[in-house]
Image (cartoon, rainbow, N blue to C red; front, side):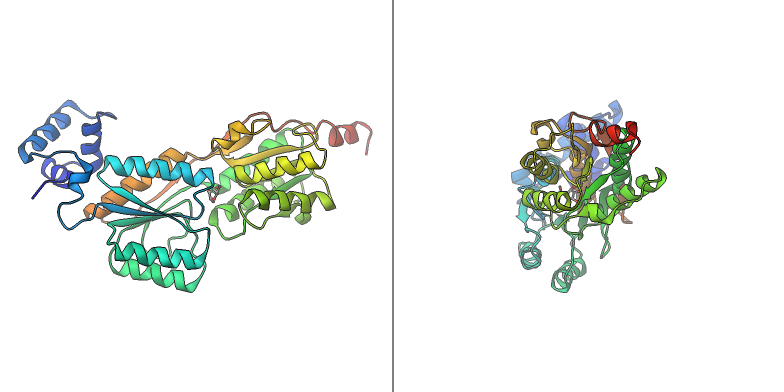
Length: 347
Ligand code: RIB
């Protein structure tokens, strides 16, 4: 039977990611380890050909990747990273985009089970019982699971997230440090742990600065461009803030578009900060200040965790929490007109 990367790792007494790094000549590996891995590969006549290895053993060497919305660049970039790393580790990806539709989530889980995938990485929140049942079925089968970008391990699984609380806090503190006090916050549909934690971070930064968060300035119904525009318009109708924290870059684009429709200049009249730091952030006019998620690392770590689970080498579940970073571009500035003027004139 043709040998796989797991056989090489086992025979050499190293992890599969070490074998992968040797094959790809990346990362820091000691000379002796590199020599040992090469010797084992030779001895086992191992050919690092992912398509050939997919045909060997009981494994299908296919990983399912479930994302809520592949049209959102965050999930596109995440999928690219998972796909790249999984490929290096000998797996192909079966890509599923659920549109956050519980029916699609349930269907995809059962399709992935039928296709005997070796494991599943998923980035969707599980909100309904039917999907939960499908997930439990998968867990009972012993199919390894890794949750990414959601901090809610409903059944035993590995988790890769960022510190969303810190992300919300950093975004809001940036706006406050520029002098903003009337700050709006645009969330998604309220279903993800990420947005809940980002909102807690927002409120913490406001509290610390002694600013009362105005509930009429907090809105959100989903993660799309349209949802961003709708939430911005809803807020602007009751009170125009000087700054908006949008919980992803797509929503921030919606806010910028609505601001333009309302004759508000960004950042002079309205500062806008996003979240994710996808390629969109560099394409907006003006370029978007945002909170960066280490998307490439998240995808890579998720693929590596799943591969380790599949190899049966992991004895306990892991939770990796990565750190977000503020990236300042041109969509945020001090509240030039309203608040600065009001302060000077004593209002
Ligand atoms: O842009 C999509 C958002 O959904 C991301 O911020 C990600 O963290 C998820 O919550």
